Image (tube, rainbow, N blue to C red):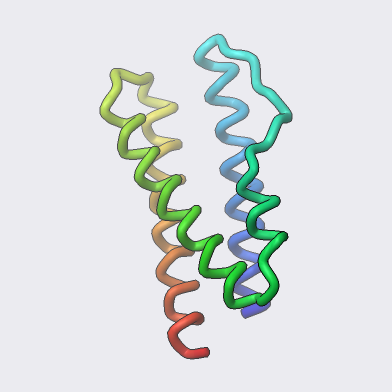
Amino acid sequence: MDAQYKQVKKDEAWSCAGLHQAILREGGTPSKQTGAFADKVIALETLQEKLTLLNKGQAWVARKIDEALAYDIPPDTELFLQEMKEKHHTNINELDNYLTRK
């Protein structure tokens, strides 16, 4: 699990950097604000609960990416979002496999 966790962490950092660049490219102003999701995960008692919620969050992001891809967006942003979605699906599958073995 340690290697999988490190990969998810690496992918999330990559996603955040890419989103930051996409926001700038689109003329927006990135924010350092975070939502309540991280606090919800931290508040759970067991690792199993935390990982299950984290995986649901990854699936939610993938669905939101699909919604964003329905808009007319520049090719660079579209390619980034497609890759981000693929990384999320890979991580979801890896975590699902881990959770079903537990």
